[in-house]
Image (cartoon, rainbow, N blue to C red; front, side, top):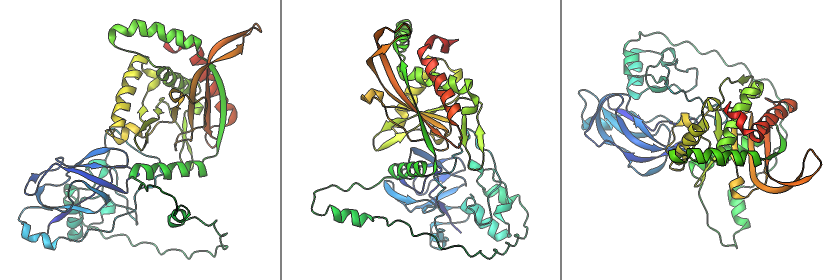
Length: 429
């Protein structure tokens, strides 16, 4: 029986995507690992690989089609002995499963590791051919360990397994009688808002996947994360002089360091100096990280990315500068892989380049904190000798998740960041 190729979930928040381009055509022979298509997720354009071998019998979704739900059949794969005439008997596509919760901690290991399939009502990642063979042999997919990409169960896993009776699901306990919930505040519908502006001229802009994800994650962040804010002014004169000196020495190598490169390094070093603040919220526990993995917000058309510079404390300023330029460039072209923008424990959002003096950034879960960076401006300051002078001052605000970092610990982290930036030569030691 022909096997349906389904729209994959290529990121933790993906519910639907755009089938940007087919890399195969009907009649092509493919094997596991061959590239089938390019798919635009809510964050990036990614290549989709085959997990089974066979012949592309029919393409069901044309390239360029938008809003294709996850688990929708996009093509039909014919295996040995099957022909195009058998396509009419292909099984119906399953109802699309719910997409992963956007509030879950994204996991993006650099190398996929085989993991036991999830059963008992949760989604099982298995190829259509593996599902069919398992059904024929009476094998419970939930009992198998997948060897395919991201732990997906493939044909070989099922063929090497022996049939075993499925465990009977335990009867659901009777639900306790709960108190009647308080009535929720009435929500204004989209139609209701549109009626308010019925006599005004406007352009309706539909939400794409990225904007939907941003709306969901930031709503969750502000509603569930107990933010508190710590503010400091940083004198940049020593940093600006030091930067000019280094850039002159690096000019022959074509390297030019930005103030943002120093901020990344300062935060990475501070996370090592205050290791208790290098942590994330994991629902029922706190995970304290050892490496300094720092995310940096990058604005793109219609949204933003937060690519992560891993082990930033161990890298030179020139290496950080080069990596940040590469990540930012690929972010703007939506060419980042999920593992390049997921993870990290700390983030930086710099709006100083737009002339913003100061602002409060929203924490990107599961991060423990985010540093909002304003512009460096000339201000009068009082020195230790009581004399007034003019200095370049930058205002920063540290937004902190109080579940992860308490006030005194957050203040210690921010002090370390300030010390690094006001004494930049120490960051090279």
